[in-house]
Amino acid sequence: MKTITIEPVTRIEGHAKITIQLNETGTVEDAQFHVTEFRGFEKFCQGRPFYEMPSLMARICGICPVSHLLASAKACDSLMSVRVPKTAENLRRILNFAQIVQSHALSFFYLSSPDLLLGMDADPTERNVIGVIKKHPEMARSGIKLRQFGQQIIEELAGKRIHPSWVVPGGVNKPISLETRNGILKRIPDALKTIHATLDWYKTTLDNYRDQIRVFANFPTLFMGLVTPDGGLEHYHGRLRVVGETGNIIEDQIDPVRYRDYIEEAVLPYSYLKAPYFKQRGYPQGIYRVGPLARLNIIDHVGTTKANEEWAEYRALRRQAILSNFHNHYARLIEILYSIERMQQLLEDDNILDTHIRSYAGSNNLEGIGVIEAPRGTLIHDYQIDENGLITAANLIVATSHNNLAMNRGVLQVAKQFIKGEHLTEGMQNRVEAVIRTFDPCLSCSTHAQGQMPLDIQLINSQGQIVDRITSN
Ligand code: MG
Ligand code: NI
Image 1 (spheres, rainbow, N blue to C red):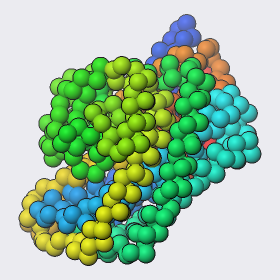
Image 2: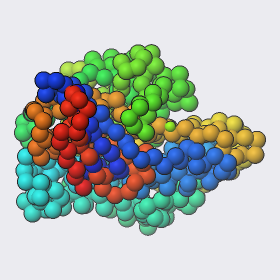
Image 3: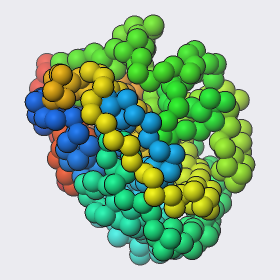
């Protein structure tokens, strides 16, 4: 067998490698996505007092500190067995929506729009955010605006953009001021205008991406995410729903604390990233996806007016569950719209100004599980403590892990389609990386390597020799 290795994947955060194996006849036989660094946060936090966990966990990742902060605080709420005041819960929701907006904007406009606007085969020295600014300045401006919109809210609420510590076990540590609240409300109409314009444009271009839609991780899997009690879109609380490839509900309203009854984590020999699967179906048939595509597949409705209209139009793309991972791009835009609409609703309610925002307690449970929908998908923090409130065990399942099996299979599908013979071209490499980008993996969460993720792609022959190799940075 020959193997192609792509290492490191550009325009993804973290550090990783892709290997592609060829058989005797030189056609693609298998492919793997490897994560090659690991920080061991789960071990690192043992012995720490539980109440330190949110700010500690926010340091796992420079890309999604807000998501870890929230999941961790929720796990601590449950260790304390407290009821978080409603206003604090809503403030946390706003923070999560701000994170979704800025993260989806980063993924769509900065990381993926160069391919969408300039083409998969465009000159790689142009096919980047600078190229977008030159050729499509209005699109670049929209991306910058939406990213700033989210980041500014995070900064105003939580203080610092990176590693905010405003969210604490039991609530939040500072109410929102009238000034901050009015300031955000004032900026919302422009953010809404920007996302509507982007959605209108994107829908007119869908035909251009036919080739990618067809083979970018376009296969049946299960989909998982949180839903409201009546099956609506939910990012902060809610219960887990699992649907099948036809959109049929397989499990519904699962209390997230029981996630272990449904999810098992397989260890892959070639990667530090574990590969969770849906227990009932076994490994590897229990492959499932999380994230924007999954969330829009599992729900019955969206819950805000405009986003619901966009969702209905999007769902008309296919009668059953939408399978092509390429449609994550579209799903992200709808989730940006939804997030802004929901923030507006929450902020327009005067209760958001309430100053009762934190409940106090010591540890009352020896186990606490916090689950949220991060921009990239379901995020699970599961802590165990001793009688002194010190962490004895922690298990984290990040969105990128949930999607691990699907990413592998997606890489294989694209490699089979585009890689011919023993040589890699830049266009092949970009497509292999682009399918990974549709998942928007946060490798920082599993590797804690900040900044751009370099990816090594190696092509390996039937004798196990590297016959070609492209490294991007
Ligand atoms: Mg884990
Ligand atoms: Ni992350």
